[in-house]
Length: 168
Ligand code: PNS
Image 1 (cartoon, rainbow, N blue to C red):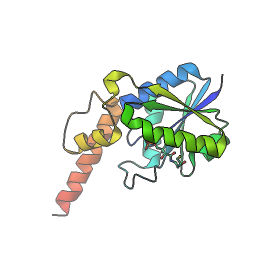
Image 2 (cartoon, rainbow, N blue to C red):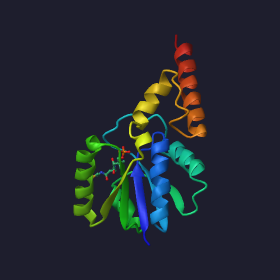
Image 3 (tube, helix red, strand yellow):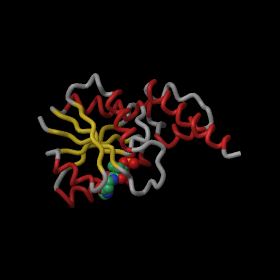
């Protein structure tokens, strides 16, 4: 039994992410969830620390899971934490090209293998970016994210609206 790394932006964590983390925790003795800045995503809604905080709360029932955040190369983080495997969820064929390329790059850089878990079909349409967009315009995301995340989204967009209003 080995340590697995579940990396991602988690901006914010969705029920789809949680499903992958829970399933990974059944197959590995330890799971490190790494909140990592994706350099290809310029703007984030929540800070790395806020994303970590939400993940800590929604995974508190999983004893072998811990949450860290990191700025830099994922394989460096994996090495530092003694992770023998990277685990990622695949929602659809459209995820595959990018994920395969990253897996091969990470393998080349460090020798660490990536394992893919197929997303539970009920979550295959879910992404943090769509959740943010729906929440931004007041849509109901309560079936897509844990209740505390839905509350944090409401709070964040209410604050943004207030700030917009104040600016005229
Ligand atoms: O949830 P995401 O945005 O699909 O996760 C992508 C993430 C953060 C895992 C990826 O961008 C990443 O590993 N970033 C850290 C920098 C790095 O190691 N880049 C090389 C990737 S091959």
